[in-house]
Length: 157
Image 1 (cartoon, rainbow, N blue to C red):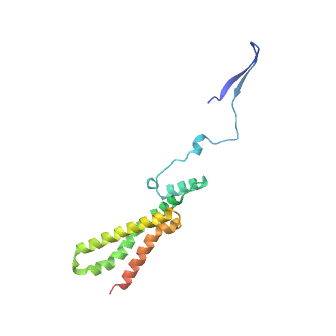
Image 2 (spheres, rainbow, N blue to C red):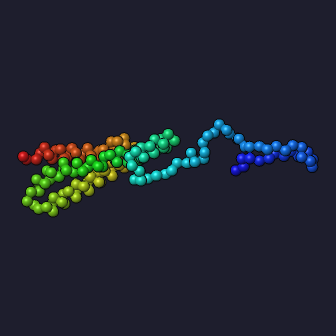
Image 3 (cartoon, helix red, strand yellow):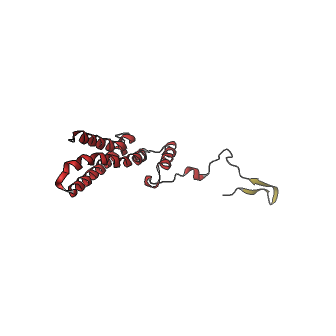
């Protein structure tokens, strides 16, 4: 792009006027073209702080951020499953009793797979905006925490 140049006015075959110039088409604009480009990032490539600021930037630009907000809340909800798994497996440990360790391992694997399936279901429901993103992310934890609490209360002491 030309920013500096020389303007020449011709009067027939002779030069009438020669003038140096600098282009200032829109001096009030301070943005550069890169300001209008949004870098597309995957939610798995960012931590929660980066994802939060990325979501804010996209919202300010008018983009739909429902799927990213679900992923943002899942970054907080999924780690709590370790505590919930402990809450659920304690009653199963007593229920299995003398059936052996493999029965307990099998039940634990089944519970974990069920959690992953329920988590995917609620994630998809949140992605299509049938549930608020926070509810969609935390619903599996809430369901399994309620189930674990119920099993703990029903356990014989």
